[in-house]
Length: 91
Image (cartoon, rainbow, N blue to C red; front, side):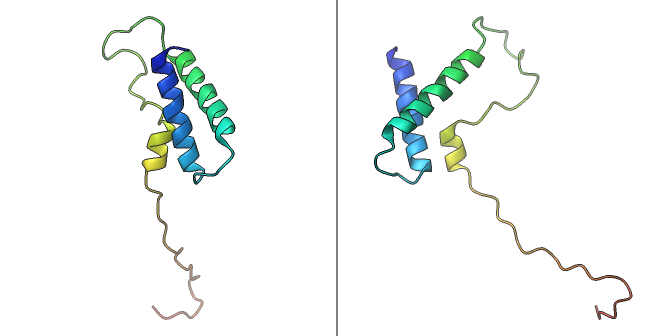
């Protein structure tokens, strides 16, 4: 495994560990998952460089585990109550 790929796996495994709440004893699980994710990313990348602007048709790239971990969760408020017409409710 080359040094650049090893660093990517290391960074991804660390991000997975942080996402899981920094648990003890799951380092091999996080490392294995990171290796699988990096391998999938490498397989998905084109082997021949494409021209600038060509390629994915304007779609956003897939977020990395670190980007997902940093993204704030959407907050939802309570659902509004539905009142049927003619039910006698005063507005």
